Image (cartoon, rainbow, N blue to C red; front, side, top):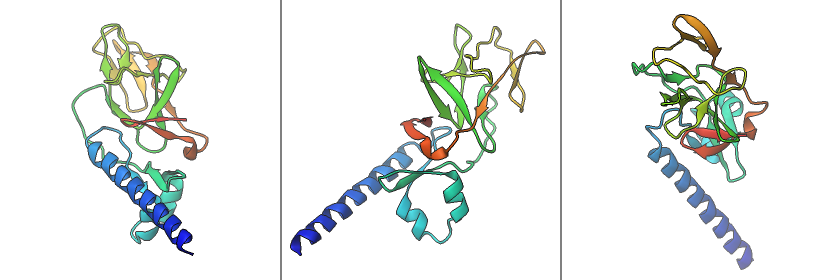
Length: 178
């Protein structure tokens, strides 16, 4: 009987450590654009103010007992033409070498080679799955994702949905991998 109590104690300690790690990640990424908070699953169940349909539809559950909350965050106007955000379902797709990631928002920059990328160097993808490269710094991005250069459409930024949000795992800094 004493062995079962020790095992229960170890499980509770491990869950407490996971919860502390989750809270630490949330606090350290509070100002990261597109960051999605991680909520210990038990908190979502115990909190009567949490809408259960939101948990089910917008959450990725992990074996460790936590979930990523993909619900819409607050949007703010920054004045930068390359600061973008997804409203509604979906993700921007960015690429780093041969790895694709998904982001809900981001502060994109135009590099010397014309690539539109995150500050970490992940290149924004078009709807056709190509790197977004702009010849001019005066490009305009419309609300439907169409990219104009000199008033002429040259690309459309892709907004991608996953087959099942539960397949996404956090890669840090607001990035998710499938």
